[in-house]
Length: 133
Image 1 (spheres, rainbow, N blue to C red):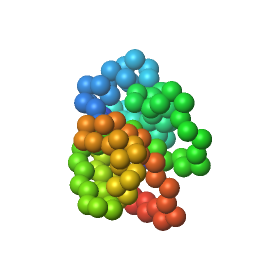
Image 2 (cartoon, helix red, strand yellow; image 1 turned 30 degrees about the vertical axis):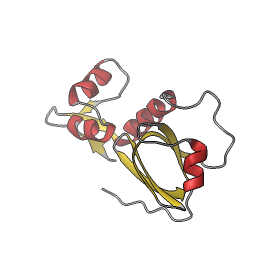
Image 3 (tube, rainbow, N blue to C red; image 1 turned 135 degrees about the vertical axis):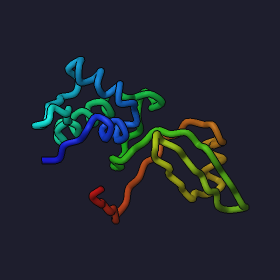
């Protein structure tokens, strides 16, 4: 069973170790101790916590999301763009994740995209690679 220290969990969640301690002390995140008394977070419990937290975080999402079969969606901010006559390169930062997409210039104009605009990035892929860290 995978376990994580407070610091490791904080890095994975993108918060401070103190925030992880407060969540644990408040009962939001289950935490135990190893044989030396160090606080540890069970990996399965951390996964549940992350899913619950993500499900409750609807900031920036439209009130009514469009019907779609794409399940991998992230809200982010357009941080860079470049365009030529046909194609545009749009870079989005969503938390610690950077997503770069090549779309048509027409799509950028229809969506009125610009640096600083909040967008929802949806990813559907036939090839997804998962590596163990």
